Length: 121
Image 1: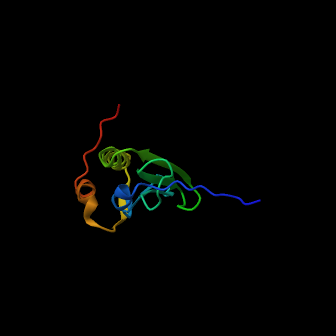
Image 2: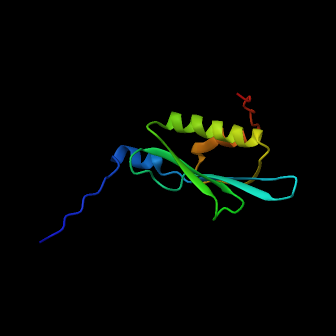
């Protein structure tokens, strides 16, 4: 008996567009001087959507919580990234580290330099 494996393959037209490496790490301290981290990265592909990014947060980057956002379009992804950045900056986080492999994230780099704080809702 032979086992057959099936793999989900992203369409060739989307592969290059989704092959981007970006990481932004934020930090903040509270009144008790505890250090908190918040990291945004798109190093992993999502199985069911062509565009995605992952956020992780906690007192240690390796022991915190994690959430993945998935999108059908690059525009939706960029909009959510800007929203997340604004929310973190509005919550008192500062940028610790950024890495952008290619120049696709020019607008995010600008958002990090001049963040627009979101209004509390």
